[in-house]
Image 1 (spheres, helix red, strand yellow):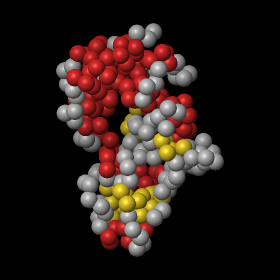
Image 2 (cartoon, helix red, strand yellow):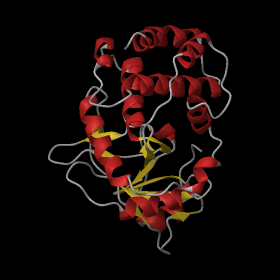
Image 3 (cartoon, helix red, strand yellow):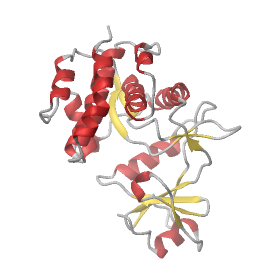
Image 4 (cartoon, one colour):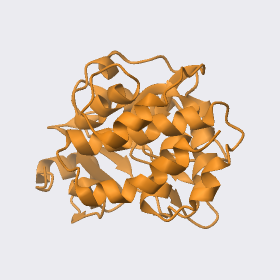
Length: 260
C-alpha cells in the first residue's frame, strides 16, 4: 500500500491537518502533524501490539511511540493505525547503543505472553524466522547450507523480541532512545542483538573483527549464525537474492563461522 490514508482516517486520528509521506517504513508511513499513520497488520497484530505498548512500563533507558486511538476509541480505522510522532534519527553506526536500548525494551516485555497470531503469520519475514530456527524448510544455497551445518542447539529462554532493531532505534538529544516499528517474534532476547549486529556487518561497515565481541551474551556465535540465516532467507523468500548479495555476505559468513 503506497497510497495515502483516506481523509476520514486522518481526521479520525489527527484532525484536519495536511499529511506527508515519511522516508523508510517500506514507503507506507505518513505523518499528519504530531501523528504517524501506517497500514495495520493482519491477524489482530496491530490491536495486540497497541495494547502491549500502551501498558508498557516507562523507562529512562528507552521510549516507544504512544499508540493512539481514533475518535471512536479504537486502535485501528479502515485498515490504518496511528502513533504519536517521536523526534530523532536512526544511526546504524551506534551499534552498542542500539543493543542497550533493545535490551531494556526486551526486559520490559519479558512477562508478556506469546500471542497466537505469531504461529499464523505467513509474511516473508515470518517464514524466514521459522527457516532460521529449523521450523520450516529453507531454500537451497551454498552459504545458507554452510551456516546451517554449523547449527547447535540454543539453550536460552524465549520471549517477545524486536526482530529489526538496527534501523528502528531513534536517537535525539536529551531523550531516551526511541524503539519504533516493533517487529515481534518469539525468540531468545539476545537473538535480537545478533540480528542487529549481523545487519551492521552486512550493510553498514561494522568491523568483522568485532563480531567476536559477544557483548556478554551466552551462545553468541550460535545466535549470529541463525541471525544471518534469517536475513539471507528473507531475501531468498522475497526473490531478491543475487550474485551481488552473495558477494556482500560471503565475508560476514566466513567471519562468523570462524568464531569459536
